[in-house]
Length: 202
Image (tube, rainbow, N blue to C red):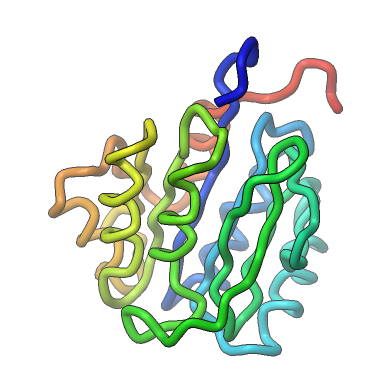
């Protein structure tokens, strides 16, 4: 853990069916000076995530990009996992970096949010803000349960009414790990309230 640094946080979002449309209501609501980086796993085939990142970037003030291997993570940026590969956090200079793995599908998907959450176990962040949005199945739950054993977490789940498919949010709620259950149009505000903004604007 870093010493002398107060509450470094990271936001880790998991989303699947209905995600591209739902994300257009969440990511544009995040400010450029968000006091945390955002890692985003959307279940999507290879070749489609770059276009999604570009679309979200066009709609947003916050920087949005497809995560690149070994790039240095910075606050105020949303990193979208590349389709067809599993995105993992790796320790490094500053806030750390990323690497992709080519392990088999997990929960029937690739990228899988479980791998992403589990990779954050040894990260230097003081708190992981986990956001579980619309999607089929139960990806995210196993990874969050594993992460909770070693890290402080705060879980935001999308509510049933605004979810295209309620599988993923319902799974984490049934595991009794959701700190907040909110409709889609309140997710961005919940993230901001939890991680804050940088007063210096940088």
